[in-house]
Image 1: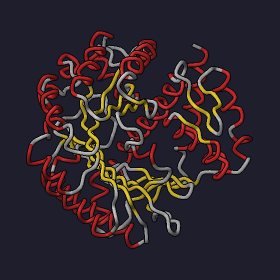
Image 2: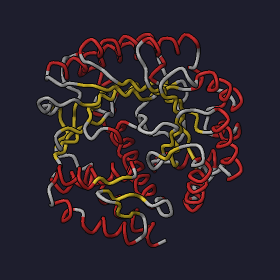
Image 3: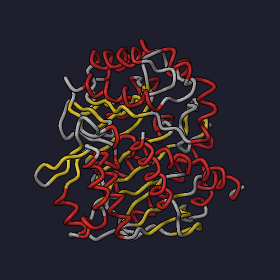
Amino acid sequence: MFIENFLTFYTARLTRRYLAFEKYSPSSPPKPKKDSSYLLYMHIPFCEELCPYCSFVKVKFEHSLASRYFDALKKEIGIYHELGYCFDSIYIGGGTPTIMPDRLAQIIEFVKSNWQIKQVSIETNPNHLTPKILQILKDVGTNRLSIGVQSFNNEILESIQRLEKYGSGEEIKEKLSSVVGMFDTVNIDMIFNFPNHTSQILKQDIETIKEIKVDQVTYYPLMVSNSRKKELAERCGKINRRQEKLSYKLIVNQLSDVYNQQSLWCFSHKKGAIDEYIVDHDEYVGLGPGSWGYINGTMYSNTFSIQHYINMLEQNKHPIVAYRSFSRRERMHYSLLLQLLEGNLNLSLMKEKYGNHFWVGLGWELLFLLAIGATTFRGKHILLTHKERYYCLMLIRNFFSIIGDYRDVRTSLDAVSSA
């Protein structure tokens, strides 16, 4: 347990340093680099049902609020166009992006009218896999459709409040089978290590995935902020982190015969398929409440209040309320975390970015990962080993869990300050 405890301490210390923003007041976006293209992330913060484990900024869908929100989002897109940003890819997450499919299509078409977009990735839920919505998504050029499934087990789905609204495991399986082949990549998001998630349930979920033959499956470890743990424990039981390691090894072993492991938690039939936006892009712009951007070594955040976000843009103000400029060593750490998530530390790329300083800035971290057997040298790359890559998964899981804590705190504070 020493390694697990040390990595937990290290990740918490590092992440909280990142989140120590220098300014909490309205700010302008960083200026873009000349001749650079970025990924555009857009957040749609509305859901039909609120899952007890999720700490992303979201509220229950209300039509008039959502309509005002899409108007505000269009204004924020215009801000970045006026600043001279260039985007080549869109990732739309939530919440549930397809909750107002016609308004979503208008937003995508507006982005495409301003930039040459090559890739469009959109998240959705199983109950939105209807002929009408799927056709809208095809018409706007969706390349990757990511569907939140979490599990095919009805007991699990009921305990996390997804059974009634999003359908049973059998219904979800049928819908997914009809969608495979409609887009370049059909991804399903799964979660492992729910407290009531037995190894038998996990094996059954994996067999169902193989039967459906989806292009890609992203198997996230359960990442719960502290404020969500009590409600989740009441519904599902207490989280068992020791079970997490066994479950992860089971997933890797069971999926590796038909899928290529692209990152710590992404498995794909196709090599080079689109993964999460933070894996495929070093720098990105985040739009919507609670969204983050990372440009030129600066991490910045929009307000976490949906109402405040709308009000600011209706007044033609920037919704950015916090930022932090990273030191060179902090930029190295951030690059290390993202490349660990990808499973491949590219030494040539790190040297190109930071010169030989990265050996000094990251020396002890790289040596520690080598010493515990989590990584190995191969040419100009440091690769994660199959045997001990769980340690890196745990590190990244801790990273995102702490970010979840931060989201919860900022959502409450921003709601009060904007009231």
